[in-house]
Length: 112
Image (cartoon, rainbow, N blue to C red; front, side, top):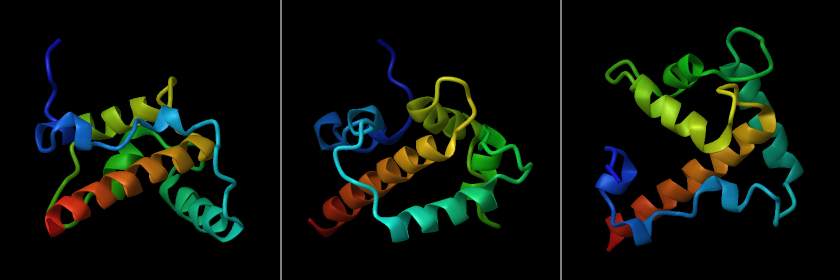
């Protein structure tokens, strides 16, 4: 199996958070305030108004004036949560949770 260049290239696999599909079933009830915040973020990112987020919209979301987020990375994130390349709001919530878990792992290892 060939390894791709993504987060696992920087951290040993046992330090990565669980893939998002492990918690898709909703073991934790959504917080209404967080849900509203995510809905607003989702609507803002849905540039074409399709009620879903495509890979190119993820690129725009994660890019900064000094850094263009790679389309290949956007596709990888999209495949984590969606089978049809169109991220729904529910899938966006899963993606957000995954990203937050990844950030927490990096912060934890940064402090150690």
